[in-house]
Length: 239
Image (tube, rainbow, N blue to C red; front, side):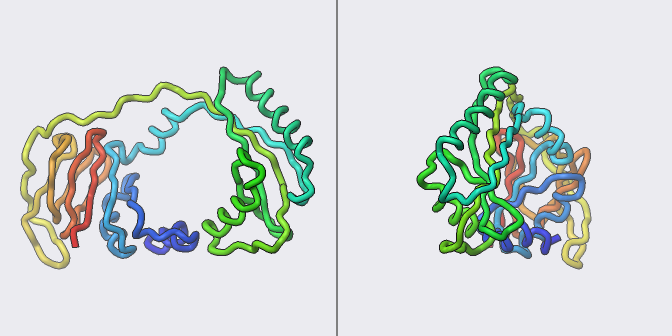
């Protein structure tokens, strides 16, 4: 699991130590502290709706439509008038099908000979080349600044916002009970908290266990946990 996290962070030029680990799903919070320690990460977030996070995200997502026009040409010879015409066609389609959408324009670019593209915003066409080089270096760890760039597709993304729930967390309801648990090959009496009774501002120092209705969060030794106003558990490792 740690190697899988490295693939989507270190392999893409992102240092996981500069980021927080989001733990969700039925088993994510169970292993998250141990995984964070392996990656040198010191902060972790566990949403209140951990096991339903993907479904919750889908339910509150904005309405979105994607429009695409294929344009395979070297970027340095692409005709700006043609580009603007194609963009406007897609914008007109979006405004016909949706109610006052917000519009985002991007271009799929690649180095000549590549079989994959990167999407780059086209708000400033004069900066497109530099933005692509920088985006490629961030994503893959290198940029071929002397190579020719190809424009593959033009894209317009249209969004209409939907109403979203107000997430809040009540005050704590009860103190955690203690239970004998095997921690690093040693039986210890540690706090076992019912997630339903935790509230905004409550604190727990690891080792501890937090029992959700649908998952379990293990707070390893050295980690400190508190709850924010939205019900997210914020865990930080104190060296």
